[in-house]
Image 1 (cartoon, rainbow, N blue to C red):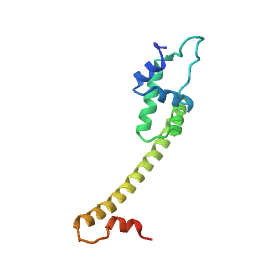
Image 2: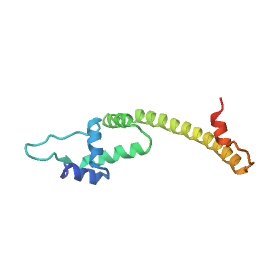
Image 3: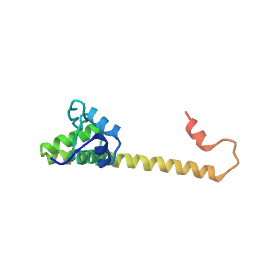
Image 4: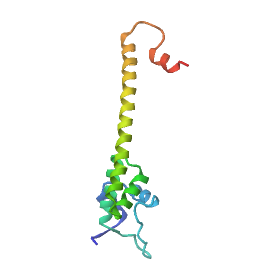
Length: 132
């Protein structure tokens, strides 16, 4: 095992704040070491790698529940299941991107109507949003 760290040093090594460490512990993603009488909990330095893994997975769009599944699958060496999870996540991201592109297209059109400045007292954006 590597050097042992306080929660503050672990947070610093992983590039997060202390509350993030505590939150991951409450979610069951990170073990909470026992607290010695009159002392401070000590974390293995390898825990920083686990926290960075969690943050990277979140940055890719995985929920904390999915991150927990990834961690479990890692222990089980279940690469095919990880691939399936990542494939589902990719499909979801692609759907969101398509939805965002459609939203962008509508908003661009509305903004262009406003830019046209036809002198109407009715704002075209408000008008479209207020339609039944």
